[in-house]
Amino acid sequence: MKLILLGAPGSGKGTQAAYISDKYDLPHISTGDLFRENIKNKTPLGLKVKEVMDTGNLCPDDLTVELVKDRLSNPDCNKGYLLDGFPRDLAQASALDEFAAPDKVINLVVDLAKIEHRITGRRNCSKCKNSFHIDFIGETKVCPDCGGELVVRKDDNPETVKERLEVYESRTVPLINYYAKQGKLIDINGDQSIEKVFEEIVKALEL
Ligand code: ADP
Ligand code: ZN
Image (tube, rainbow, N blue to C red):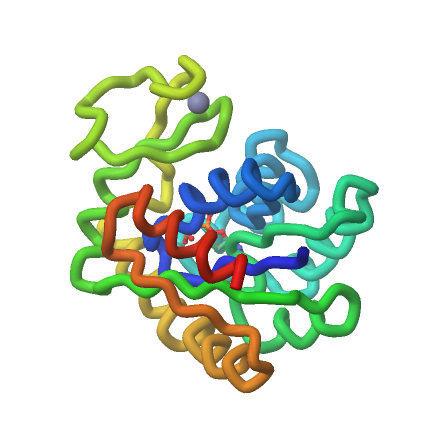
């Protein structure tokens, strides 16, 4: 199964991706995580994208497509994939259609007015990459899943979040129509509990 998770920043893509990847045994491929890993390790790619990521803009399409193509050529993707954060604009979507078109696209629909709160209260595990909200875990620095250190992402501040939402509206929202036209789009209400959202995703995938 080749799956894409679509949704605004902070819509819960990463959280649901972890659940889906676990249940269907699909490699969870997050371009955001891949870029952050490259930045942390100061690779040539990481040095190229650091600045643009810090401002909340998209990394260049050619670099992003190369990164995903390369990742998908890994044998663990023979059984399919779960893409989180890619594609993010029409150029990336049509590139993906050339080498590994998705079967289904899950679109997490959330109230954009709640996004800032969702993102600015977010804490990310530096070890297992899962993310949590302080509304649920409080101000701890320890990951409830693996004990790793929780950190705040550099781009999870109000100014950068505003920019990311604008980029989402102008560059990513057109993908909703793109995949709807292909008959691949599944809308899921993302403004529900994590468990309920996951339950609806599973139901929709098993139809
Ligand atoms: P979120 O979904 O919360 O915005 P991500 O981790 O998916 O977080 O993305 C963080 C940043 O990484 C983006 O703002 C962008 O700079 C970069 N990025 C991630 N995926 C892509 C992509 N497919 N194309 C271009 N840039 C990307
Ligand atoms: Zn963890």
